[in-house]
Each structure stands twice: as C-alpha cells, then as structure tokens.
Length: 379
Image (cartoon, rainbow, N blue to C red; front, side, top):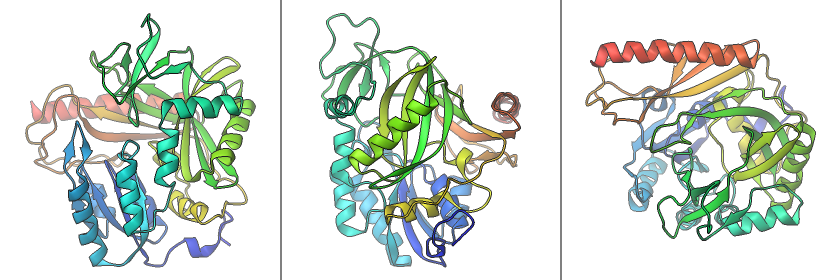
C-alpha cells in the first residue's frame, strides 16, 4: 500500500491512458506523477500540457456546439495507436454531450461516470427531484422562464465555468433552464467516490471574474474553506454520492450563508480545483482511477497550509503572443505565437501560503504583476 492508503497497482508503471477535454493539463500532469503515459487531446495545447503528454493531438472548439465529435474520435484513434490505453478520462466539455460520452465508452473503457448518470445529473428537473428525495436544500428550479424574472438566473444545461450564467430571462433556447438566485458564498466540495461511498477531499471557496456580458465567469478558488454548516454539507455530499453511485473525482457546488446552504449543481467529473488539492505525495489521478475500480483511500491526502489558483483573462485581444519566460507559479502556459481573443484565458496562476487569506492576497499580487508584464510585452 502507498502512504495514502490505496493499492500500489494504481500508481502505474508506464500504462497509457487517454485524456480529453477543453483543457487537460491538470489531469495530464497528475497522471504523469502517477507513472502513466498520458495520451492527450484538448483545445488549448498549452506548453505544459504538451510537456506532460506522452502524445498530443489538438482539438477545435466550436463555441456554439463544443468539441467536434468526429475530430475528437479521429484524434483519440491516432493517440491510441501510439500506445494501447487502459481507458479514457474526460475533463470538462462533455457534460452536455451524453451521446458523445456513450460513443467514447463503446470504444474505450470510460474511467469516470457513465453517460446516462451524467445526463440525469445535468437534467435540471431530475436534479431538483433528486435533491427533494434526499432532503438536500436547493434553489427553486424550472424549465420555463419565471413570470417575474427578478432574482432568477438563466443557465445552460451542462454549462461549465460560469460564463453561461446570466440574470433571467437571458437568451432563450431549448438548453436553458432557470434557477432562483440565493445569497451567500460559493463553496465547492471535491470528493472521491467508488459507486457506494465517498471521501470528502476538502472544501474550496470560489469567486467570479465578472464582465459586463459574463457576470458569473469563473475567477478562481482557494482552499481550505470554512463554513458554519460544514458538517451538514459533508453529510449531504456523502448521501448524494452514494445515492446516485458517483465514481472517481467529482465536485458539488454550494451557496453557503451562515449556517444555511443550497446545492447548486453536481459536476460528475474531475473539476477546476485539481491544482490546489493535488497532494505533495501521490496523485489525484491515481486516486480517480482507483475509485473508479471501487477502491477508496483509508484517509484523504494530507494537505498543508492553504493554496489558491486564479484564471488570468485578457482585457484585449492578443493576435500573437510573444515568447515569454513564464514564472514557476503559472500553469496552462500558452505557446509563443498563440492568438488569444479579448476576454479569453491567458493562463492560470497559483499561490501557496499558511492561510487562505494570505494565499488569496499573494495570488492577487502575482496576477497583477503578470498582467502588467504581459501588457508591456504585447502593447
């Protein structure tokens, strides 16, 4: 057994594994730490993604329809020809594509939640019914626009990153649903599940990076996060994970106000906070694989101090990024000559400190310094 308490066989010895999604860098890096050979297909193709990958293929992002299914399958087939994979792990980009997930599962072993479970969890009416059945507080949810839109949000089914959320009525469409806005702080629970039980890895506080047209765009997160209702929240996480049979790394997003909380959504995949929960010893990717095979660690990975990460977005377009020596506290580093549109992410910034407040303050300083440096280089 390893120090974290899962069988040593899940720390791979050169086994290949497919990883696909909008951005696969965090999963690929964690897989490398576990000894896997990551065969990676993603949209961004950042420097550190390619460095972590044993083989890489780029994907085209259609902002209206997501990842092209045919292009994805072609890329994955090419990667699988490099080295026979044990299966495929999917990052963000598939929550609204259950048919595509099902097609992937027909070709390779899907190391994660099955397509039908993801479709159920991302159906707003089924999600609301699930919460009701298990006594989990959740905001009122409806499929049609509310008569009075004040205090309601319009969301896209299967959306990720917060950019799809707008005050109601928003833009109408068959994929739009409506959720009552509730007060409080955004708290996310990262959990590991084996289909029968779950291990809560920790809580993080999240914040937006708003723009005029994207008021809820994801900005970053810091762990640990304190909450007066932490025990009740953890109980909800364990009960729901067991009730629906979640597998692998997942997250649940809450709004927390004093000792009250509301569950906003379940993200049935490895999420945006992997960097700040990756242990110094071991690998979240290895934990994910083990959990999908039914094995949970005896105890969660030990995490010291606090850690924060944030997304640095452009305020203006960058037609061709100059060559940059990136600070060691950056990840998701775009390659030189990359074109970055206005309002698009440039990279992610990390900060570690003794407390959450000091980690978040250090993060803000680093993001400001890097923004000034980039503006000077691209002006």
